Length: 570
Image (cartoon, rainbow, N blue to C red; front, side):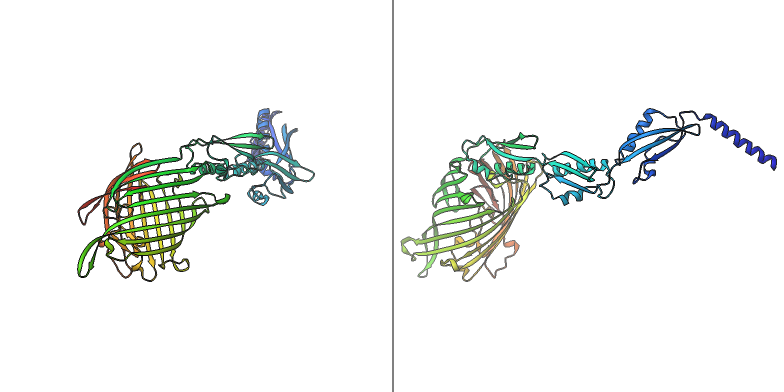
């Protein structure tokens, strides 16, 4: 046993001697860290790749020093050598950054300092980490970029060891002036009131893009609206924005004719100017001549006295003839009537947000009806009304562009009060809700268009109000395939579905399905009693709008009926 133990000791000493013999003067025999007060030694050792037993190599040492420096806690690092157990002991001397007692920002106006500091990872009361600092500053610039402040940049970072405070200077990028080019007719102020940006404020790319969209929505310019930034003071990060526009024709004169069961054959002339004298005002006159005659004059000022409110005025006169049958002295008599209806309206509107608009409309109508050979005594009526409308537009195109939506929706709600405080011969309320939805079709340029509409009236003696004030269903705007006003009453439900698609150039096509009816209070019609119309039509895109010709089929009567009108059904 004693011999065996002695042999083991000799073997250990022999192996130790061999190992010692393998240690050269450049072999690493120990590694130490000095100078760190706050940062744990093990954290530093974890990034060092050189190990005991490795040969000292300059490139390897530089690589390890860089890894320690990349930790971000130190402002300087160097390595000492000293003999140790036949080799070298490496002593990494590290100099820690100072403890941060505060961060001060200069130049921030978009955000509060509290908002900025909450987004930073740097810890107050702890050693400065330059890696985290660089990451924080990069994220800060990215936040500006993501929020549309694309000119913002950090121009200076100062470290005050005496105060132990970090000073960060930011140049957010200011808009000096907006210049408009290319508008020969349109006044500058008409364009300027569409600005979502403000001179002297921090430049925001999203607001600049919204400005371009608002200008295009006016309908006075082509799609080729462009913008560019021109430096004014690069040191202070100040720029001018130059907007270039190309004007299009805004005056239109159109004439044509058509046929419908309500008016028979008729002709029309339409004169319109959507940018009167370059002031952004719209004026127009329209006349229809045939069995029935209509004359209309309208004017719209989009910015009343420079305010965000618009005002529209219209005057209208219609002469309408109708054939009637009445029992007179126990005899069925056929005779003609002539109604002259004239009046006007004034509408005050306000675009509350990009998608939400409010409007109030006051209207007055005066009607006088006479009968052939004075079979019945002449009658006159006066109607005065005030209505309030809310419109939410979530479609992909603005109304001013005269383009049909392909996605999104439009919600419209209206309350109209006739009579009472306003006077007149009638007293009732009319409520209307309408929902329009647009979805992509089977191809990219095809569209599904749906409309749901309901309306009802309340008040005394609703059966005595003029027919043109009742809820009428049937005709080109409601259920195609039926004569105008086939159904009338004080309650109404309507559903329309269209599949719209281009044919060639300015010619478009549509297939449609209409279902609707109106009825009086106390009646409860079944769905089988609703008017049903199906068919197809074409639309011709003109400066006056879409000229529409639809051929509707009425299944219950097996009849086709053409409908000619201007504009989409909805």
